[in-house]
Length: 588
Image (tube, rainbow, N blue to C red):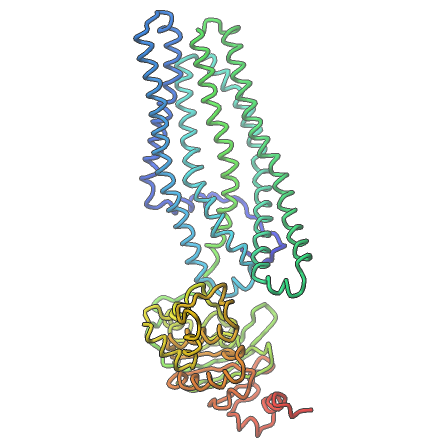
């Protein structure tokens, strides 16, 4: 998926047969069930086809001879064939449903696993609603196509062959009459196909735009209501949905035209068979004419079904293209072969690092510094100077444009990602809490940790008593990113989660920005305890909280303008001194 937003259509792709071949990999291990389903359907088709043949014989021979016993036997035979066909179709469909569930599961799994390995830049630049659409409705539609539509198309093709065999053995002339009408039908069919495909791609884009806007609106509902944007947002949604409805309305004409042509042709052919059978081919018996009319109906049913299946497959192929587009998204950040997989100690070095999120907008330019093992440093600077970017680069959420980042003298690109992120934890300003208990949210970083380990961490961070004051204590369920507790409390729970992981390198990005000063002073005492014995990087706007750091880096103009302790930088009276004085209010 290329970079876009909710009101921008995604780029359409040309149909590729390679995608069709790749699609079958989702069926690995399930071919046996589909083959059984196919065989059962063939047997059901033969059972149905024996009915008109039997009726033909009964009308032409059994009834004229007044053979009641034979009539009874054939009546029972017809009944048994119909019941058998129904049972075989039912069993066949149960196999299909089972495979369909597994295919959808495999497809979603593969997409979800791939999504988790994609770099942050992918999620920074794509509407989340459009990504979600691929994992939900697109996956379901494609699994339906693989298990239902393709199987149905194969079955219907064989049905046509079976019907033609029965028709040719019944009356060749009337069979040729039936076949003559298929030429016109297929000419119209292939004319409409490319038009329908383009319109279906457009409809998918419009639906994806609606989903993207709805997702964005739900996430920003509080902002919408606070600025009285309801009417404006309603107009935007109406415009997007109107585009979707207009496209659907236009596409519906092509859907209906295919159905109408198929139904009309089938009815005309049946009438022609009766007329030709009576007037032109007068040697045909009544039983033969009735049987041929019945076979004609059974011949056109699969053709109509194939038309409907093909229309739905066109839809599904456009979904499949979007799914493979996601799966083909390159893993910019991935492990090298034989990557370093031992634990790290904590020394960090930047060597001539340059980085930009967007081309030609440099955030860091030729940045170099070194942090010793177990050293505590602070990153300070104005908003947008690149402090959080430095932290994100250390954790390899993004890769540098140039230069190297070393951990213990090893390029982080040569370190196993699991080992790197196991030993480096980052406490962000905006963390996420899941819809589960406080205990489970804290254990998210270390699922094997005991309840006692969680309680000890919370006691050290001075939040144990607050959690116990809640009605259900550690079992309190947090909803919708913890909206049932305060922002400061959410931040403290996230901090406990980070500390439970016991990382060798800890990055705190405004870890206490959402708590009041009194609580912050209490928490800082706990933080000072847990920071000992590990390398730590503190990003803070409240400069009073970083006085105890071994070094302070002042980030300015895409690089470091000053390095030193709090005392050294205050004596220097440079950028840090000015910022500190501004905070305590001494600059008039």
